[in-house]
Image (cartoon, rainbow, N blue to C red; front, side, top):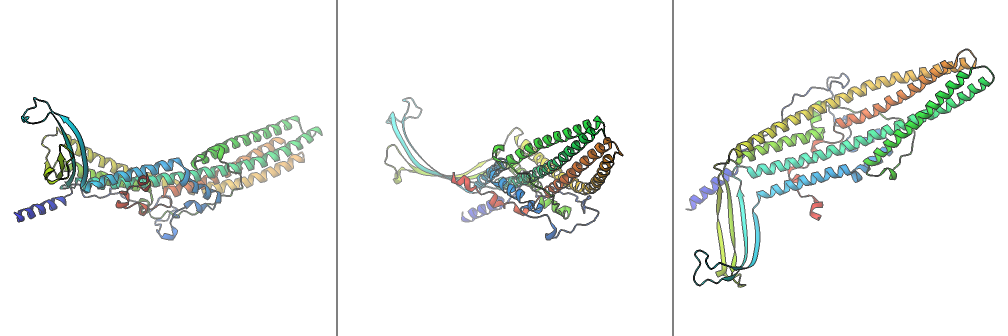
Length: 487
């Protein structure tokens, strides 16, 4: 008998090692050897010193005000807090599933007063109509994981929690990049307002000069009208820029968790700092993007789900034990009042009407969907990197050309003003030169602002300072959050 018990126990242990989930392999991708828009170099060595900055990547822009604003996102942004709550929810779910690996023990007690029918079948002749039934007992149960169902449920829960952690990192990175983009847009508007203020001051002086020349019958009244039109148009642009700046300031306030009434940013001179953003090898992108990591963990969870669906075809074996004391009165906790029941239970599906087949088909389809989403996420990541590399390169060329054009427009205006003062040229040429200079100045500023914003977008596309090593381990992902414990 002992030998049979040992053999049976060994067989159960062997079965408990079964896992019906497919062997997991991340979806295979063909990666290019280098980024197309990286500047022509066929290889970009991935040295630790030349990678995008880890941690607070925004410090590469050398702007103390931006640094202070970025620090506020972590503490006050509601969107980030919501993502953190979703991660805590996923961790708690993984912890709940992990509990299935352990036995369940319950303690129960009941105190009841009962009346039975006189005509109850099989009622004894001397049984009372009214009797008490008081019970104190405990029960224990344990599901023997013969086919890996519970283990695959745990693996899926842990992978989902890790995916949620990566989603949290994606939300954080997105908010940080959005704040930097809005901040640089606001500083660009500050510079535009400064250019317009200088332009208005220059137009006022030229209007005064034109009025003086008109009073001296040197120029026609049309020149005065043109000067007034040009000045009024510049003043209108000042008001439009002020409106745009106010809206951008309000957007930044919302990102740092404040109402517009509680937040303001004083205008300040701004010279864009364009940090070098090395891209590294394309393969490093798979390790640096949190959304790619989240998509891969979703594939892993779906793969484990196939194991759960396959295990549903096989019998479930559970071990159960119940024991306690029962009496019609309060004379409990004595040996004659004890009861117990111990034994295994087996459940084998015989007819499910196609439910199990549908469940397996659904699990396979979910894995196919997750794999397709993973590939699409990777393709989108490469597109974003290439888009921003191209933008940085061509915006840099355009900015140089526009800066040269601005200098030429400045010289043209100087010559037109000299000729106008000497009476050798009409005011129309002055207006044309002034308009061309203002347009060139604003276009140059716009290109420089877009350059720094493209740097932000490239850093975001490369994953910022994040790395796949920042994901929690499977054990950490299945740990109940501390704030949940406190509640």
